[in-house]
Length: 208
Image 1 (tube, rainbow, N blue to C red):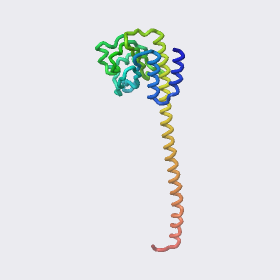
Image 2 (image 1 turned 90 degrees about the vertical axis):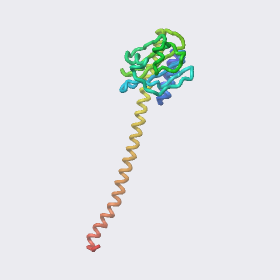
Image 3 (image 1 turned 90 degrees about the horizontal axis):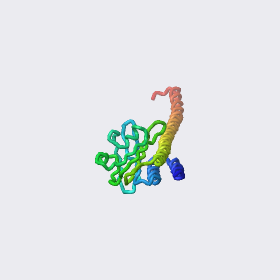
Image 4 (image 1 turned 30 degrees about the vertical axis):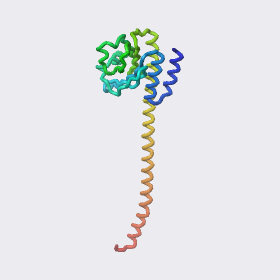
């Protein structure tokens, strides 16, 4: 497990595309935890919503692109408490009505682990099993380590995105500056002969 964790960490830190990173994280977590499915919910603090951004599953389950309010989400417990939260049986009616859960009737137990970076909850890694399962301490520690690696890697992708955006803005500004200098030079080259013509016209004293 330690070797797999190190390999997963090395793989995650090389990803600069956010979607690719999330898919890699859910895939590695599902494999290491030997789970039925693994979902990654991104948390948007300003709107108090979560969105299932990636899902690795043994079944072909569609991923909803909707934003779900925290007050109606099961994974919100991990966000509010900033701790891992386990649910032994999510097949009961009150759980199955929750829209943010993957549409897989075989999912039974859930371990929700918050992804925390510098005090901010970026998202939740959700491990689903297809049988009643009590997650032991080793499994919780392993999932927590994966979530921590994922949080750092996710923040890196966001920083890279901001850097690329800043570089693009700088390139555009540089082009505008060049165009401004060129326009000023052209205006200067046109103004000089016009000034000479004006002086000559005045000196000639012709009445045109």
